Image (cartoon, rainbow, N blue to C red):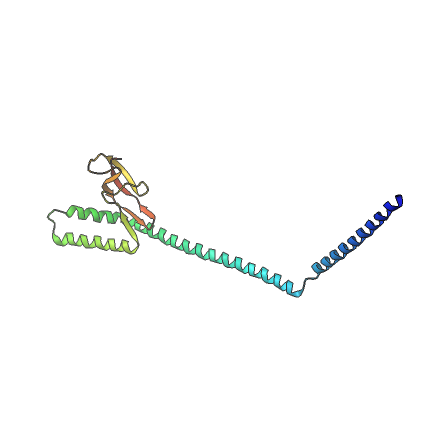
Length: 186
């Protein structure tokens, strides 16, 4: 019985040796393949790398272009807002002058001249895309309006503007000056 046990062990050893040889041969083939890529494979890899660089560069340039365009618009709006801010007292004075002339005996040429100047100023502000906002009866918005005082008024709703001391101005969404108002029923 002892002899029979030795025979299978020898056969197993021979099988293991053959398996090891085939594994070694396969490993050698893989190493040879890895060591010597073809010229076509090299060029394909280089092309992929260059395409990726190009795509990244294009994306960076596109982002740069968009960012600088947005910055230019922002700078233009800021400069316009700064210049218009200096002209707003003139607009307020024109509005007050027109209000003073209503119902009074003032030479027509004088009041007509003030009206024309006020209209020219309004046209200039419109060309610069500056909008006046805030009228009596509008709803109070703390982001747009500066509440100077509050009053109780049964004729007006809750948080309604009852008087405007100074109009507000904006360019697009950018507030140049907040409106000064009286709020009813706050």
